[in-house]
Image (cartoon, rainbow, N blue to C red; front, side):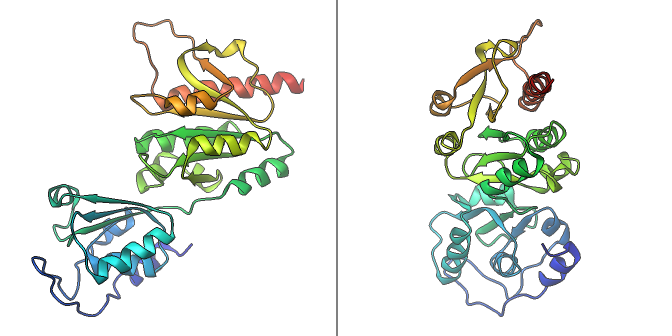
Amino acid sequence: MAAQDKYSTEMTELLPEEPEEEGLKVPAQDPIDKKHVRSGIVEGRNAVQEALRAGKTADRLYIQDGLRDPVIGQILSKVKKQGATVSFVKKQQLDQMSETGRHQGVILQCSAYEYADLEEIFRLAEERGEAPFVFLLDEIEDPHNLGAIIRTANLCGAHGVIIPKHRAVGLTATVVKASAGAINYTPVVKVTNIAKTIDELKERGLWFACADMGGEVMYNSDLTGPIGLVIGNEGSGVSRLVREKCDYIVSVPMKGNIDSLNASVAAGVLAYEIVRQRMLKQG
């Protein structure tokens, strides 16, 4: 991965002047705020094209609804090849998202880190001589939660974190910061469909425990062996389809006056119950 200073330099080498499109003036150069580049948000056609040309990994592309022209087509083609999410939104939404005021109908959210693949998780488990232990996150939207979960995954010895491509936060700069460096050691894999990924991993010997308030208390479930811990969305929890794919439905015992834990806190409590059971089994 290129150093940040090198990338910031590359971002200043803009494309030649482009023609005006009907109803949308495209200047020869987009003003690039390096702070926004470092945060992973790139605005404007030239800046987005150059970010992709410089090798940045696209996480999500926002395009003004109804905007169609050759430049947008080129951007779309490059982003889709990377498997990133594309959202067509109203101009008003882009205006609200924009920090430069010159988005020109396109805003790119880049990944602050490269994603791993599933094989990297299994390689890491094999290198350590351990049964695979992974986190699967079903539509976690808060970057602070994702970062905290990656940090917990690293500290409890998990071999990776799996997140969905859609309706979830990716590896933004905020996530990287919240992970407190754990992102450098814990593989994060982005998949198209969490439910299908569970099926694939079951074929490789993993069992899955889903966090849900209505489940069996975690102390009463056997959480040893190859396992995936499934944590759901901050508001709606684990989706029905994903929940049905899981082998165990487990809960954290709660004695207070409220009925739920923060997603990252619940992930931490359940993860360390897995660690405890593994340690006991090892003797």
